[in-house]
Length: 347
Ligand code: CUA
Image (tube, rainbow, N blue to C red):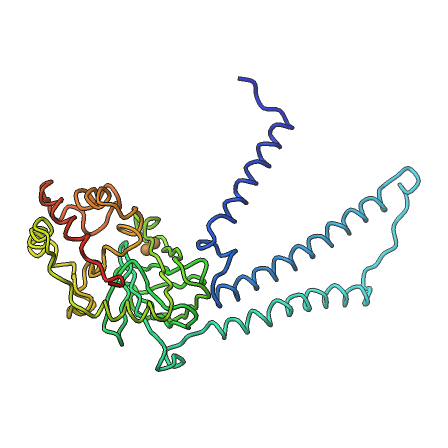
């Protein structure tokens, strides 16, 4: 094979760069660069401000560099000349001290102000606001609505256009809660809780990620944020508060019995299941069939669900469900059918 020459190499580099940049502008509900909520927008504005300032500084420095290196180029004529010495020039020294101070102030004032606006300490949370306790666990997310007495997981459901207050903690190791289009990252710790708020401008589904390396399936620790209209949100809460129904169909009914023996020790199927936080060892499945994804990552299809129930380790290495129960194919089929009846979406 012929080695690629200079021009071709440059072309390859530019093509790759374009691909990377195209990746940045793809899915609008994934990107920090297309904010869809109030604090996402604040962070985006700060990022743009600093980027523009940095670009201007770089531009000025490069222009001065080009000007100086051409104007004061060493030639035969100037070879033995010594240029004008400027050491101790007060005007110059004040100028190049004051300009960076002004630039830093232009960045610092909005940054500090945004930091205070983004703060959501426990005392500052309004009583009538919706608050949600978020817990990161190896490799899934739990969302508890203490006032509504609802526990759910993997899909965080919130109403549009409202400030929602989150209390973030971890159940095992440190994770980091991140909804790129809505807000910045926030660590979840096992001991001290962190607080933040989110606010979405538009209804829709937003991507969420774990942003702290936490184990072999860290990259698969995804979740979704479902932003509903105020009415739909209220209906959803009311539906969630209802107990799960007994399935009518025979296979699903058999699945429910297998589930009660094999899975119910860790998984609850009622949103208001009374077990306390430390005893909630696995995701609450009360509205499992409404979820955007299986295990946060796989498309919601019966085939994917069967694959997940049969061999979770192959899909999410290191997860706590791996190798706990070995169900035969008929049992897997029945449990799958049962899980797909667990829906709370507007009936
Ligand atoms: Cu949890 Cu990374």
